[in-house]
Structure formats: C-alpha cells, structure tokens
Image 1 (cartoon, rainbow, N blue to C red):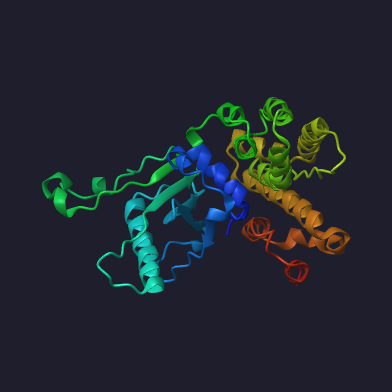
Image 2: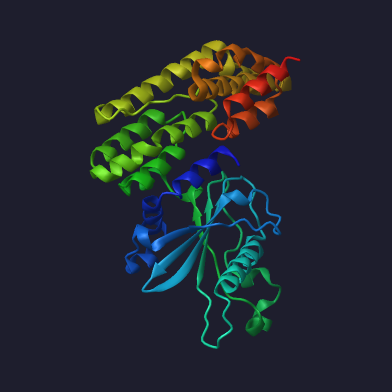
Length: 341
C-alpha cells in the first residue's frame, strides 16, 4: 500500500473524520444526522477480485432511521484512470450483498438488501474522465433499457477542487486536504491561508487537524521531492508557531537541497536533455527523503546504516519510503546491511 493510501486509510478509521467526509462530500446523507455510534467499519478483502491493492478500498455500514446502508469508498491516487470503474464497482457491490445475505441467512419474501453508495475518491494529476453511470458503458443501452442496471458512483475528484475552496470549508478535513494540494512553489502562501483558517476552528477541529498534520507534511515533502520536515505539535505550543516553523523549515530544506545539487541535478538534466543527469538528481532526492524518514521513525538506532542507501537502486528506495509506516527497525536494518554485500 502506498504512502497516500496508508494515510487516507488511517484517517477513515476515525469515525469523526468519516462524518466530516460525509458532511463535506455527501450532503444528501446529512438529513439522517449520522453519529459515530451509527457507523461500523467493515472488512472489504474480496480475494477473488483482482484489482491491485484491495487494502485501498474501505466499507462502512451506516445505520439510519433503524435501517442499514453501505458506503463503499475506493481510494484512487494513481494518475491512470480506470475506464471500467463501473464494472469494478458492480463486482464489489455484488460481493457486499452476497456477504449480507450469508450473514442474515434469510429467504423470506420480505427480506430486502441494503442500499450501497459507491464513492471514488480520486487524487490523481489528470482530470477524471471516465463515465460515472453504469449504463453508459453498455453499447446501445437505450435499446435495452429495461435489461440494463442503472446506478452511478459518486466521484470526488480532488484535482478539480481548488485549494482555497478546501480552506474555506473551515474544518479539519478541508485544511488537511488543502495541504495535499500544495506544492513547493506556493507553500508560503498556502500555509498563511491555512494558518488563518486554523485559528478560527473550534477546539475539537483543531485537535483533529493537529493529529494528522505531521503525516500530511511527510506526504507533502515526499511529493515535492524535498527533504522531509516534521513539526512535532506540542500541547503547549502556540498555534501560529507550528505553521511559521514549518514554512521556515521548508525554506531551509529547499535551500540546502539546492546547494547539495539535488534540484540542480534535475534542472541541468532537463535543460540539456541528459538522461544521466536527471536520474542522478532523482536518486539523490529519493535518498535524502529516505534518510529523513528512517531517522524520524527509528532515531539513532538506524544512523549507522544510513550510508548503505548508496548501494540500493532507486526503485528499492522508493518502495522503502512508500511503506515507511509498516516497516520495522529489524527489517530496515536487514535491508540496509544486505545492500552493501
């Protein structure tokens, strides 16, 4: 599971954040006044379906007016678009209903299946262009209307949502998603806007925001190929200081990276079309990120082995950083020790 998926998977284990997500993106459900005790996080591993990382799909059972519905969330962070998404969702829906039938073991005439709301949460660079209605994937569906399933999935395309719009929502999830849409060219501007919005949040929203802030900063740093920066939020720290410190740390990191030739390697390679220069710059950038993430997680215990990153290929280093939340100290040391052999 990639770094993005791990982060959003963790967020959606928090029922308060699920409610925030529903209120933000699924306003039709707000009328049911859903509370955390009405939400159950279900297992979604359908081993017979071959759709890559099944851990990136999340299923919630929601009780509304003494009835159940299922909210099925697919996390799509790849740049490529799945143009058979309708069929993929249909297969998942059939499995969800099959499990429901097996659990209830009812064949009574009055037995009903619960509704399922499928949601695609997309954060790729390209605009999502696949159809969202199932029947639009069926050739000449109008001629066979009565035989064609009619449903759609809800699409949340973050690539089409402006950062300032997310900030203006003025809740924890909106501000966190706005961080994800920030790049190093507008970090100062973005965090000034986030800082201002953060100060106006209620106390519980501030708590939710700071709980996930550091992990969003890791993703932001990795996405922009800059040395990872962590700002630990202490309970007694003044609120505005964490933003000020982060922006300052990013500036220093960018300057240091430039001096080390990380960005220079990219720019020189691109300008001259020298493939070797590009690859070298990319390798140095990935290596710097990996060192920072490993030190952040394991501290002094990992320091004697960090130089062994020089012996790893770039794909192995990328895999290491993408799975940093899951790897143990022993696994990291073994990987680095064996790299020099």
